[in-house]
Image 1: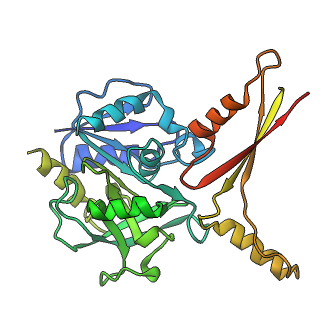
Image 2 (image 1 turned 120 degrees about the vertical axis):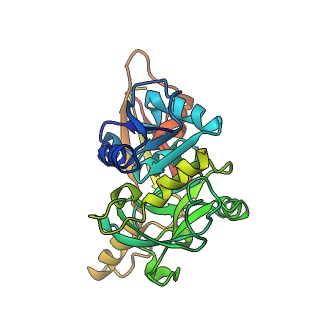
Image 3 (image 1 turned 45 degrees about the horizontal axis):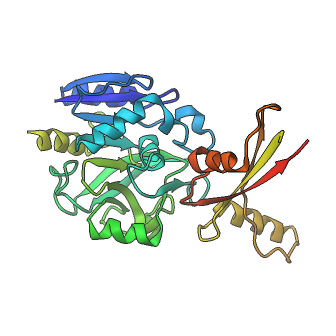
Length: 229
Length: 81
């Protein structure tokens, strides 16, 4: 399979995504500059973390109008895979591929630390290699990760099992103590209704090798490969 | 029309942690009468003198880019020369 990592001005996790997909799980991968318009040859697009356009105006607000985004939306509409990590998740909500908004963290601080995630739905194309309720240790690094959706959107997310990850503690307890940023119902990652677009604030690409604090991130990249076979 | 100011504010239904923090600080400075603070942002737009924008166009700019309707609302102030 082939991954494509989009590079916006201000992306800074693009090389980590490239390294993990290319060198760790050994798949084809290429960078896609945000001015390119053709993404037809890739199976899964990654919108990486970073500070696209300096986070000016709002996170992701300007990146969503980058030329490549029209093709990303078409790619998603065809049912092909899109993974947005951190700033990538913010861009996906701004462009309307995912519902809700990532607001300023509850405590108004940038948070960079390892957190625990509970896998709420392991029947998706991004989590099929995880156990149901598995607890993953994956780092977060963001100032705007406080997920918000209105009551109607939240109901739909629940009805369609679109909530994929929630912040929890080591034992899997999901409560305000295990909620790092104030996200609605501890939501850390969601998919669209069709299940082919995942947005998540934690950074799986930062924990896929032995030398890292955890290797739990690899389950997401393995699931993607598995879903295409 | 030469200039317009757009005031972007967090919606009342959305928690505004920045506003809440500023409110606490004002209360701590003995302004006990401050009940609520919300922090938004002003955006000043200068327009081409010969070819200004209509109010409708300014609203389009807000809806398309300047404002996230999920969590923000806005008012537009038009400043005529």
